[in-house]
Length: 286
Length: 301
Image (cartoon, rainbow over all chains, first blue to last red):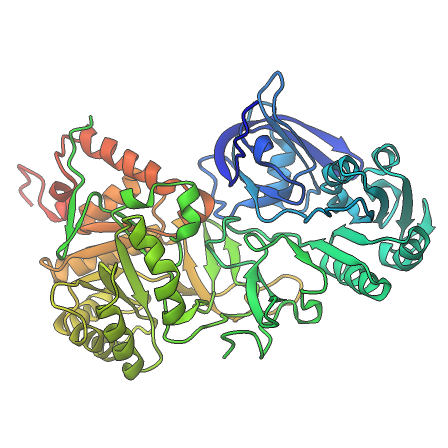
């Protein structure tokens, strides 16, 4: 083993190994050498969809569910996504062997605690996919890991079985009550934080869920690490398309990129109520 | 195949290749994917005198074969640029064209005066948003006046108007070359909100959708002003797209939205351009410039 730490993203021409249905979602496994070695939980990859003649200009960002540095096919990367537009439909229908331009890992990972603390991992729908490699790293550090998974209904839940193997305890919520508690993850979170005496909350999901998580964590006195869903764009930080207002350590609000300065932010640093705007007190606001 | 000469003289700026990056689509972010010092030149994100937070999101929306965007010139301001990005480029020997924009002539002058003494500036590109010959001329004049004589001034012209008259106004006021063109005025409606999809409302269309439009602009400017160096920008994806710009009259080309899809596109386009030239027995990029305007041999037209 060499001691060299490989960092930074790489662009590789990989290929689709398989796309399997996972409940309401698609589980994509791609061969993408070089990415697994550099991966840290919370970072993501982007893919160019539609092949070389595609009229699609922007890349699609995919949170990473699992990586395998070596194997029969070389390094692989697994992602879970929902089909919600023509691009994701193309990806879901891509036959094994389809060449795929992959860039990653991108962005800043979840910050890991130095001490063996108690952690609650909160995911909504398939956004919970990247929490599983995180749970693994936390357990390696002797952290106690609990998971809170939510969805609209049972079939939209991702990873509940795997979560039981990977964590100390799992709480499930569905909006329609088809399985677990009726309600949303943010409804169940305050009680869970108190019950397990959580020190850190890690979350992935839509903005309103992340906002609720950040608020509950703050009320409980825990740190929160929230991963923003990176919108379609370049993924490298070039296009400045994915900005959001975040308060820096100097107390100044800046418009920062979800793809480059994120996707993981401290929950208490993001100005959740001001998403979609440039706040008047942001640096450089006119 | 490899003895094609790509070296390009853009109004005195010596470049190893005619392939540049366009303002806002080339920066330190690309260094992980491409050798920035091998580019013809890198055009920086547009710099303004003061820090700009930019437009509210969404800022970039995909359309068929393109993107409509309105970033609002988010940038750290001239001081931030001079202390962070510029030395970083200079240290890595990246030929650097600084794109500037200002709200007044006084600000353009201030930008030019401070860039004139900054180490590592190879040329200045004036980012022009309004399709108005008078305003184009005035902005270029002020920037040219306060820069050293040897430093090329590029005027990046607004799209959607009479590009040849804008080019003439820029050149009459001291521009050494014109960049043709900015994105085209455009709009996208959001299917849910039934309002403009971009936070800023209207935006500019770029990408392959505008390539043929930009090619026409290059053609028109070269026809009207055959001795003015033109930089072709708009929807270039392949080596042939770049060659087409040269044939229409461009001395160099800028890559924009293709770098969003493929961060190593500059390497690929440069390689493909070499092959496109070689396969047509063209010995150099310079040999291709304006060739489409010539009558074919033996033509009796």
